Structure formats: structure tokens, C-alpha cells
Image (cartoon, rainbow, N blue to C red; front, side):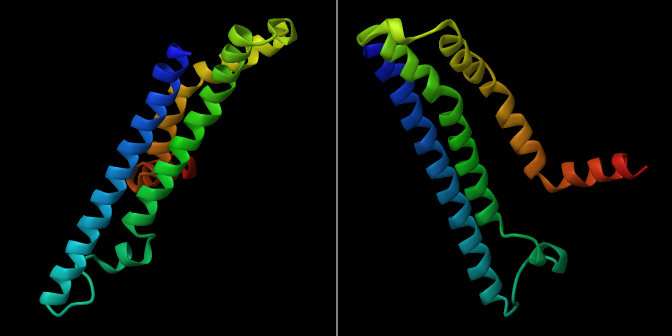
Length: 133
């Protein structure tokens, strides 16, 4: 149970806390930009193209929620099967049931780069160029 708490629960708290503070910093920065624009008597400090795009606050929140959800998707089955096998009836855990959570957990290292790459506007612009050509 100590391993479950330190390797699953503590990591989950660290991830959620980190993304919470990242999103809070983005909200604070966007608020400062709005206040500066108000002092300068303009509607926004961003260009017209940036204003039409989804705000940075919403993008950061979406990325944070998506990354946390995918981390939960990857590691929760592994944690559940580990606790079941250790503390409960381990005869219910078949070879397939023990292998699928391992595959989900090992795939967790792939999610972050893909999400950050796809959510970055310049990356999408470059990919559109290569796929259209």
C-alpha cells in the first residue's frame, strides 16, 4: 500500500498541483495583458488573428485536463490490478488482465509529446504545409 500511495497517489497529486499552478499562471498573465490593454485604451494587445483563436487560458486548461486524464487512463488500471493482486484474490487476475494495464502504463510516455505538439499552433501550421504539398 505504501508503494501504491507513493507511486500512484503522490504522483497524481503532483501532476494535478503542477497543472493547477500552470493554469493559474496563464490566467494571471492573460489578466495582466487585459489590464495593460485597458490602460493603453485598446481592446487587446494581440493581433486580430490571435484574437480570433481560442484564448491561451482555455488552451492551457484543455491541455492540463487532457494530460491529467490520459495519465489517469494509463496508470489507474495498473494500480488497480496491482492492488487487487497484492491485497485481494489474485486468482481473478488472468494473464490478459495483467498484461493490458502494463501496456496502458507503458504507453503513457507517448501522450505528452503528442498533445503538446498538436496543441501548438506553429506545429499545426508546419504540418498543414507538409500534408498539403
